[in-house]
Length: 315
Length: 287
Image 1 (cartoon, each protein chain N blue to C red):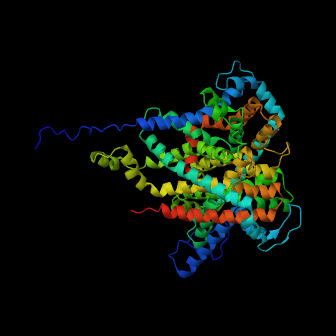
Image 2: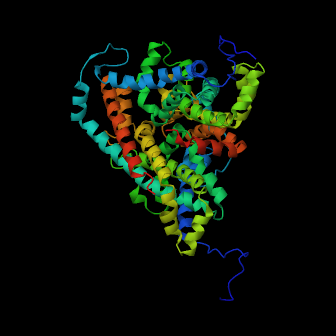
Image 3: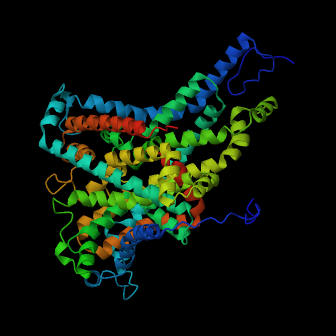
C-alpha cells in the first residue's frame, strides 16, 4: 500500500497511515480546500446579498442622498441629528413601541396556553390545529387585502357591529387616527397567535407524562401545571418564540402598514420599519431612511439581548 | 396495610382536568380566525350590493363573475406564471447552493467549517427587511433593478441560513466509514455526495424545499420593490393589492382575487399537510 505524495483535489486519498504531524496537517489542508470549493458559492452569495447590504446601511446613513438616481454626498451625522428632532420619527418610535409591546404581551401568554390546551388532546383538537395553522400559509398581501376590505367603513367589522346592535361603535377603522394602529396590531395578533400556539404544542408534547403525573398526585390543577410545571421546563423556548415575534413585528410591520394604512392618517400608524420604507421609496431621502434603519437595527439587538436574558433557563 | 389499595397493574384513575374556560377561549379564537376567511369565501361569489346587505349570508348563486374580473384587471394569469417561474428557479438555485455547502460542512471538523456554520446561524437573527434599501442599490448597480432575474438571484440568499443549517444536521447523520470506503473504491467527492449523502438527506431536502417555496411564493415587500409594478414582471402577491386601488370598494373582486392567489398554497397544503406542518415547525427559527 502506498500513499500518494501529491493530493489531487476532488480525489483526495484517505490517510490510512497512523497520524503523524505532517499527514494530519496535510489532511487539514485538503479538508479546507474541499470545504472552500463546496461551500464557497453559498458563502459568496450570502456575503453579497445579505452581509454586504447589511453593512451598507451604516455607510449610507452617513450620506446625503436625495433619491436612488441622485449622486450622494457626505453628510456626517446630519441624518442622525435630523432624525432625533423629527416629530414623525418620535411618533414612529412611540407607535413601534406600542405595537411590539402589545403584540408580544398579548400573544405570548395566550399562545402558550392555547398550545398547552392542544397537548391535552381535547375533543376536536385535530380540527382546531388545522384552523390555527391556516393563517401561517397566507401571504402578507392576501392578508392585507382581506383586512383592508374588512376594516373599510362598509366592511365586515362595521356590518357585524350593526348586526348585533352596536352600530354606534362603527368607524372607518383605517382612516381614524385613533384606531389605525390598532387595526395593524389586530392583524398581527390574528395571524400570529395560532401558529405560535402550534409551535408551543409541538414543544410541550416532548415533556414526559411522568412529570405531570407527579403533579397530579400533588393535586395541582390545570393552571398550576401549565404555569408552574410546563412553563419553567420550556422557558428558553418561550424566550426564542418571543424573540421571533419581537423581530417580526419590529421589522416586518412595514408590509402590513403599507397595505392597510400607508402610515396614515397623518403619521398615526407610521411604525419605524414603515418609516424606513417611506423615507426611501416615497420621499426619496435615502440617507435619512438608513439612519432610521441603523436605529431600528440597534433596537433589534437590544431587544433580543434583553429577551434572552429575561428567559434564561434557571434551573 | 389498607386492603382497599388498587392493584398496581390497574391504570391510575387520572382526574380529567376541567377545561371549560379553555374550550371557550380556544374555540372563540378559532372562530375569530374563521370568520374573516368565511367572509372572504362568500364575498367572492356575491355582487357588491349583496355583500353590503347580507355580509354573512351564503351567496345566492355561484357566479364566477368576480373571479373573471379579478383575473383580468390584475393580469393574474401573467402574475401567477411569474410567481411560478420565480419561486421554482429560486428554490432550485437555493438547493444548488445549499446542498454542496451542507455536505462540506457536515464532514468538516476544522475551525473554518465552524466559522462558516456560525456565519450562517447568525443569519437567523438578521431580519431580511433591514437591508431592503442597500439591496435596491445593489440591483441598480448590477443593472438588474426591477427584473425577475434579480429577484431569482436575491431570494436564495434569504433562505440560505436555514437551508444550510438544516441540511447540515441531516448530513451529519451519515457515518464517516461509509464515505471512507467509497473513496477507497475510487469515488470522487461529487459521487460521494450524490450516492451517499443525498439519499440520506432527502427528508431534509423536502423540508427545506417546502419552506423555501412557501416563503418565496408569499414574499411581498422585496418582490414589490425589486421586481417592480410592471404587469409583465410582477408576481401574484404584487398584483393582488393593485386591485385595491383599481376597484376601491369592490369587495367581491378583491375577495375573488385573494382566493385565486391563495388557491395554489392551500391545494398544496391539502396534498402535503403532514409534510408542510413539519416543515413549518422546523423552520420556525427563521426570523
